[in-house]
Length: 252
Image (cartoon, rainbow, N blue to C red):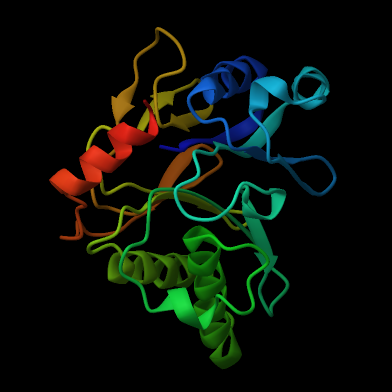
């Protein structure tokens, strides 16, 4: 399966060692890599190759300035071809001018978004269709009234909760202020507390203390601190025997 990394901090921190360890997992996720980090603007980089075979990723990490927020993704293709347009993160701007960025680990089996957005998306993944639907949903609210921070959280939380049943929906979303984090499959996301922030990862990235992220609950972070938490929902993804067999076969 794909792997996710997210980071939120109150001050800029060098996260290069976490990134190097994270991208070293690309031998089992060889179909692309992507990363979001910030300079004087939001930078999005991605390639449809294994991270360990990238001609420039190592240099980017070496010269990356300390960060307050970051996302990273390594891809194991389950839906969509192996191409740059299908690599995460996906990013876009709502009608108020706010930029949104998403990374996703999982498969969306049941969704009203699959056909509606297939004709307009850049690539052909379920993750991109989900992201486009999220942006449209946010725009519908903005058209009535631009939401404040708490209202943005409630909109995103409701959207994720409504789409979680029967779908594997491990994801992180960054809106320039808040980092939204969610998982609904056991043992697939954890986090580590730092002095001034938090790092989230599909798998532990060092020998420190990594805590399992709560199940079936959207939590938002700002400057390394939890600021909003949704209620626990019932949309836990329980793999079927067919799903487990198919996933095992992909790694043989």
